[in-house]
Image (cartoon, rainbow, N blue to C red; front, side):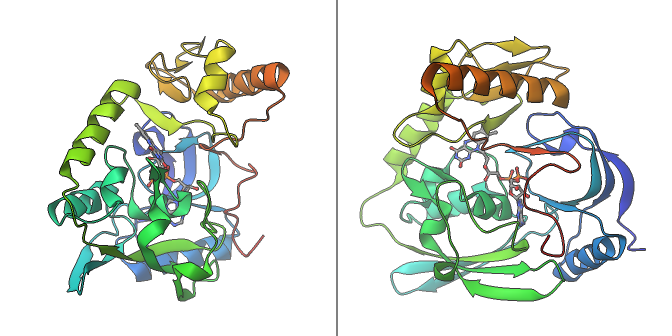
Length: 299
Ligand SMILES: Cc1cc2nc3c(=O)[nH]c(=O)nc-3n(C[C@H](O)[C@H](O)[C@H](O)COP(=O)(O)OP(=O)(O)OC[C@H]3O[C@@H](n4cnc5c(N)ncnc54)[C@H](O)[C@@H]3O)c2cc1C
């Protein structure tokens, strides 16, 4: 067996909200061949695989498959081109390293992703975005391992990205990404600072949280609807919707997955009954047999 595949690992330390059950299998590969070994291992055992980045939009229950933490696969190569910077980056690299680089180099747009935790792979999979900018905007190529363990390099223009959505992890595990980001004419620093201070005021960034719980419905804000139905500050056990931002769940200390499921259910019920709007989860609720699309072998 691949030496670093462990059995029965507690998951709460691997998410920003600090809630989690147990993974039956867990691995933290550091190279692409190691990722491939993990995929083959799960395929042999018919295990579900959940690729995990920083766990900033993920909450775990008990998971009978393999959690594949990608944080060890890190590094980047930067190449100066005419009018732009070409950045090739491994999936486990922290997004803020790219944000810092884009600030130093005065690059267009990317600095708007300042102030939230993510790996590059997780940000690509979620098509993370803020202040009108999305990760897919200057994404040129994605390299990924499919569920049979084959490596592909595809142009981002051939992949479908939309609001907080991408073909990953359904298509496979992102192992690296290439961005080509143009240099900006004016300075980006002032806007960057405004974004950072806005985040500090409007989000519970000092609490264990998993970011936005629901996607914004078309033409509205999930936070506004949740506030209207009394969910701001609402608690189930040690899990609450933040007093600072009604769409952010926070862990008050001993939050559990069951409490998360309960509070999400209550929020959806209230919003549906009051506004007829079916809120869709942005956060990934991961437990065995749940309906997300990471099952192996194209299932
Ligand atoms: C305080 C706070 C503020 C936030 N603000 C924002 C915001 O403004 N905008 C925003 O978009 N998000 C925001 N988020 C949510 C979160 O930061 C993003 O969704 C981020 O992209 C998640 O990255 P991650 O590496 O933590 O992914 P994870 O939570 O680990 O995983 C998320 C999804 O990506 C998949 N995935 C992870 N890595 C890979 C890989 N290598 N290959 C294939 N699939 C993979 C997982 O399977 C899962 O489906 C915020 C979160 C917090 C805690």
